Amino acid sequence: MEQLLFFGLGVTTVFAVAGVVIMFRSQQKIADMQTHIEDLDQYIGDVNESAQKEFDELNRQLDSRLDKLEDRLDSRFNDHASFVDGILESVDKVKQKLKERTV
Image (cartoon, rainbow, N blue to C red):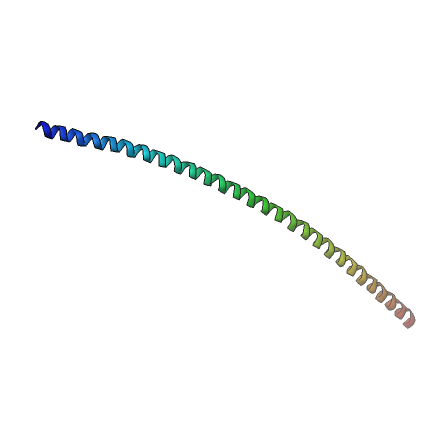
């Protein structure tokens, strides 16, 4: 009976020590994984910030180019509108002269 009790206590002691060792190893692995996750989170934040800066720069460039294009189109439209106005004035003068001759 005594041997059975000592055997049971020995097995229990071995399991307890093994459990403590496994617990500390698991705790260390969890700490390593948390550090790795924090590093990845920082990396993702940096990549996101860099992508946002690139996106903002592209938006600025696009806005600038669109403004230049709009200015060029406005200028050409105004030039063409002036040309058409000149033609209409000439047509009106011709109509007026024709009207004066027929009256």
